[in-house]
Image 1 (tube, one colour):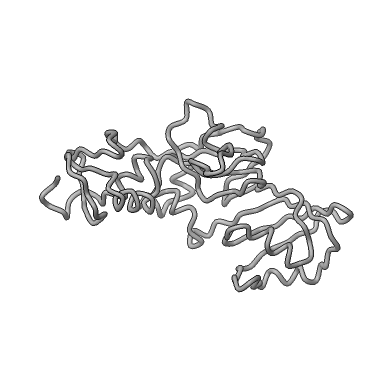
Image 2: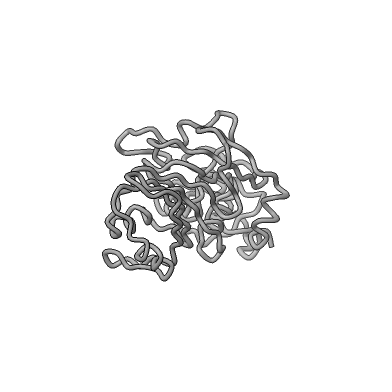
Length: 244
């Protein structure tokens, strides 16, 4: 392993750039003794590596990092956004085209949520695009059952606390009102099951939830299950801070 620990890059970042996992997961894998550098098991992520170092994860060599790639995916309902599911349910990654590189999701969509999911082969980019500081909003089409209280929905722009969890500003537009009302909901954070929990606090039950936009990227008319790659030029234009 490199003698000068000021050269190169942190091992967790290197694994993320190689599309193995996120930096956070890389640190966990290192703690579990699953990573070797130049034939030696490492136990701390406080290590820099260079291109000359030989890295293995679970006994398999880690190749050179690919160029950073980003994909748009129309996730169907009924798939979990995880690599492995303890309940044996089908995952997003089970259904992706075989020609795709190893990818990870930018955030998650829960089992019954459908729509736009971003995928990337770069764990560093995934983390960057998940952060609220990026300023990217998430927009959803939501079908709800229940009596709408438009005044309460309007107040969601000031944020709301539900079961002790504070949710930042939520913008709600009523597109169609009736037995099955349709809303357009825009989030600034996108916490776990945020829309379902907030709508329940409004006395509404979510019957269908479709993410139609994540930051500048739109679902548009992509068919269910389709994947579309974003060009490198567009990635750099939309996430300039990441490439500095």
